[in-house]
Image (tube, rainbow, N blue to C red):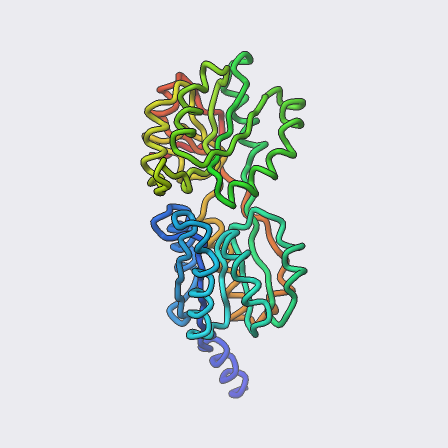
Length: 324
């Protein structure tokens, strides 16, 4: 009996397995999406897990430098020799998996808009790979917007920048546009622009072109006429101030006072929490990452800002959550 109690005490007091984790962000923590998922990832881990972070910053640096930055990230990996590498968003996966696939590590990706299976099939090696997918809630958002707009205003402009994540999201949405018009009675025009001035033109002329609402997607890679990156807050503030039709959004960071009025949104925190739980399964339970199924992120939540809704004389549908 004494030995049983000793065994139980050993199990209860067993320490959490320590391990190094390297997070390679496609972007940087000044971007609200990254700040949100990084915070959640940190909270999911324990002090025994040593988290290191590399920011690729690909929303602000030119694409011509992506390969160079990926080399820098790989150099940090070689110095740290982590047990797990977390790849945040599409660019990190695209540029880092070809360098990491044959390393003796586990890889957990998050925020991936593309279907990664075909890409992963090209790079099969020692690394064990799993992760979390991100899907903009296009159909849900349009269905909810349709509940608020008059029938003669059910033409919606969906506007994105020209970044790689936006391109992937747009391709996914284009396959659903005709179904939305047929089943929901909402016509959508999906546009991608690279230059700030073109973005401003699309916003300021939307009403005269017959649009009843605008959904802002991603806007962080817009550049001015000198090809300098335009701060995301500047873009969204200008958009809010100059639009003549209601604004909605796909991501939580775009909703609020001086921003979009609401939307069925994705949150970086959800992705970070799911990735964190996966990392713990690998480090603490010694699970094989390649046997952990790839997951789709949580299905979003409907949020709104009362002041922005009131500005347009709109009432949030039942079930939407009010935010400050």
